[in-house]
Length: 269
Length: 245
Image (cartoon, rainbow over all chains, first blue to last red; front, side, top):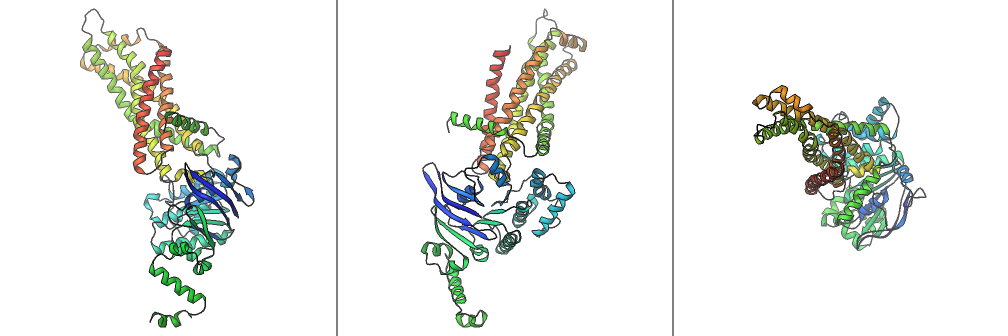
C-alpha cells in the first residue's frame, strides 16, 4: 500500500500539486486520471522519487519515503517496476538483454536461470520468439509488453504505468489493460496507472483518482464514477455524446432497468 | 542559465558519479564497451589525421627552410617537435571532441528524452555513476593512447612524405629525429592528452545528461557540447603550456 499525505510540488512560481492526499491499495489498479496539465505525471514522478516533493509525505507500507536517504530509497526502488509512456527500452539492447538487465544488475544468478526467468515473463506477456529482436523492430503494443515484462522481472511490489495505452489501437489497449489487471491480482502488487484512456478507467479502474489543476477532485471506484454528480469529472470522463449515451445505458443496466440484450432493442427504438 | 549555475550543476554531476557500484561486473562491462566505442571507434580518424598532419608539416617546413646553412635534418626535428607538442595532442583531441563528444552528448540526450535514464533511476541505479563515469574513465584510458599513436603516425607520415618527395634522404631524416630529442615533450603531450580526454568526455556528458525537450534539443546539446569542449581544450592548452613549458 502506498499512502500519500498533503503532497505539494511546484516549479518556480507555478504550483503543480496543491496538497494531494491519496491511498493506493494493494492488489488493485489505482488509476490517476485528469486532463493535460492537471499534475498526474508530476504526482507519479513524486511517488517513484524522480521528483522531490516540496512538502508532504509518501509512505510505502508505512515507511516514510520522502525523507529516506539515498541508500534506503534504492532499496524501495528495487521493489518498483515502471512502464513508461514510450516504453523506455534500451535501444542498443535486444529484448532479452533489456529484460535481463535488472537481473544482471541486482542478482547473482546463473545465466541459465536468468534466461529462464526472462522467458517466463515474456511468456506471461504473451510474447514469444522475440528474444533477439531490437526495440526498433517491435510494434508499439509489443514494446509496451516488453516494457511490462522488464518491469515485473524482479517480482516488484509496486507497478507504475505512465499512460500505458498512449499511441495504441483500441484492441491492443484492451490487451495491455487486461495484462496489467491480471498481473496486479496475480502478484498481489500495488499498481498505479496514469491514464487518459476512458476504456481503461471503465475496464480496470478499481480505485480512481481524478485530478484537477493540482488537486484531487474526486476519488472512487468505476461503479461510483457512473453515478457521480461531480460536474468536472463528468465533463472529463463523458466528454462526447457517445460516451454520455453509454453512461446512461450503463446506469440503467446497473439499476436493473435493462435486462441486457432483451430490452436493448426496445430502448434503441 | 548563468555560467555559475551551469558550473555548479556540472560539479554536482561529477560528484554524483562517485558512489559504490550496484554491481561491479556490470560497470566493468560498460567501461569496456565504452573503451571500444571511444578508443577503437576513433582509431580510424586518428590514423588518417595524424599521418596527413605529419606529412603536410614536413612538406611545409621544407618549403620554408630555404637557407643552405640549415641542415635538412632540421626538418625532421621540427616535424617531430610540432607533432609531439601540439599536433598529436591538441589537434587530434579537437577532432575527437567532435567525434566522441557529439556521440556522448547525443547518446545521453536520447536516453534522457526517451526516459531510459528515468527507467534506470527507477530500478535504483545511480545513472551518473553507471552512464557518465564509464565514459569519462574510458576516455581517460583510451584518448592518451590515441595521442601516443598519433605521435608515432605523425612522425611516420612526415618521414614518408619527405622521402617520397625526395626532400630529405631517409637516413638524414632518421638522424634528425634523434637529434636534441627531449623525452619531457612526450610527458608534456601525455599530460595534455589526459586533460583533454577529461574535457572531451565530461563536458558532452553534462550537456547530454541534462537535455530537456525533444530531438531538437538533443541536436543543440550536441553542438553546444562540441563547441564548449573545443574552447575548453584550447584554453587549457594555453594554461598547460604556460605552466609546464
